[in-house]
Image 1 (cartoon, one colour):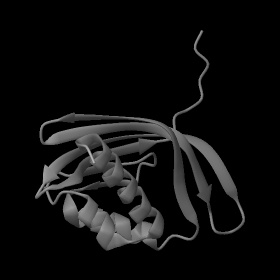
Image 2: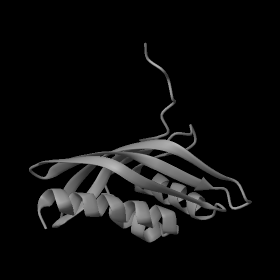
Image 3: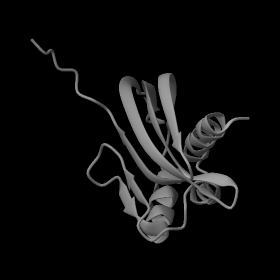
Image 4: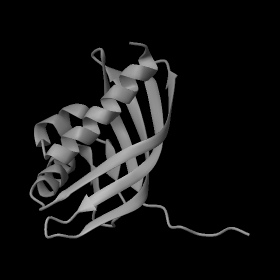
Length: 134
C-alpha cells in the first residue's frame, strides 16, 4: 500500500475506534505528543495531550447511541513524515433513544509517521452550517 493509502486507512481506523468506543485504540491512533489536538463541533468536545484525549474518549465511549460518518470525498497529501487528510461526507448521529439525525460533516486531520505507523496529531471535525452564498 502506498503512503497515501496507509494514511487513509489509519484515518478510517481512528473513526472506527471512536465509533466502537475503544478508548485504547483511539489513544493508539494518536501520537503521544503533549500538544496533540482534537477539536470537534461542540465547545466541550476538545482535548489537548494524551491525558485529555483519554478523558474525552472515555466520556464519548460512555454516551448512549452512536456517531458515524460516511465519507463521500477525501484528499490525502503526504509530505515526507507528515500527511494531512481533508474529508467530507454525511454524519449519522443516533442518540440511543430513538432520534437519528443526518448532517454534513467535515474533518481535517494531520498525521505523523511514528515507528513505521501513521498516527494522528491533530484532528478537527465539524458540522458546517448550510449557508447560501450570493
